Amino acid sequence: MYAIGVNLDLTNIIAGVVDESGTILSKESIPTLRYRPVSEIMSDLAVLVKRVAFAAGVDFDTEIDHVGIGTYGTIDRRSGTLIYSSHFGFRDVPLLAEIKKHISIPVYIENDANCYALAESRWGSTKGYKNSVIVTLGTAISGGIMVNKEVYHGAFFGAGELGHHVIVMDGEKCDCGRCGCWAAYASSTALVRDARIAAIRHPESEMFRMVNGDLRLMSYRIPFEAAKKGDVYAAEIVHMFKRYVALGLINIVNILQPDAIAIGGKLRKIGHEFIDDVAALVYEKAFGQQENANTKVMLASMDYDAVIIGAAMLQAWKEE
Image 1 (cartoon, one colour):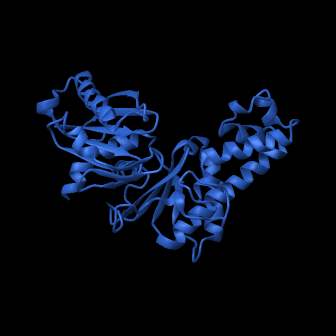
Image 2: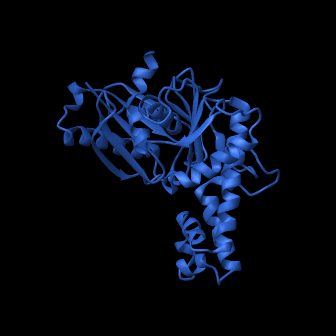
């Protein structure tokens, strides 16, 4: 039997047929068009999962055991209700009820970062660690917490929203509505914002030259690339960004003291030099860290396909 995992994100709905070894056999995507009614989004999702099964040469009704969906927000996994998602702007949306209008096989719904954490724990960089955390540094910051190799949901299903702990009182505005959240300083969105500000202030900078003065072209990679070319302003942006990333990770270590923290998301693509510098700050500043007895900080070994793979694992995890 196979399962289908779905990553329902802000831009695209991505579905894949996954076998028992965690291998994606086929994968397709469609635009989310998130401003539509949820009923329309779920209808398109149902068409997509049937199409991706056909592409894999698998009969949807007889060879697909279940569909798992990972998405932003707090999910009541008992009812399949999306309780709240600041990214989508949804509140108390009955995702499971909507998708079941189109699909007769079992469907399970979970937070996307929890799906990522499941996949990493089973097949990725945190395999073999009993207690681990996945942190996705991208447009926002998400987190999945594994305790005794199981997802920790908290009392009301919202545990793991690591991007929304405050690191600067009355600081930068976060898209959640609060100010000073970690995501407002250590996401790729925050990095691009700070790089644009520095480029405006210093048109002589390499960052400004790399975008030809069009700040709309600024990306999270440019400050790192410009710093390597000797841009002192870019170097300061990168330096502060690493400190902000480390600050949030230090808080996670001090509160949870997991065996390992794996960094995924867009910033994972920057590579080992970035994460090694961040890890050094964590090892230096986290409370009670000792040589050979500290939380390992590493790059996640899987990309965003981990959400698809983890979503496909949901039934197996649910029954354990």
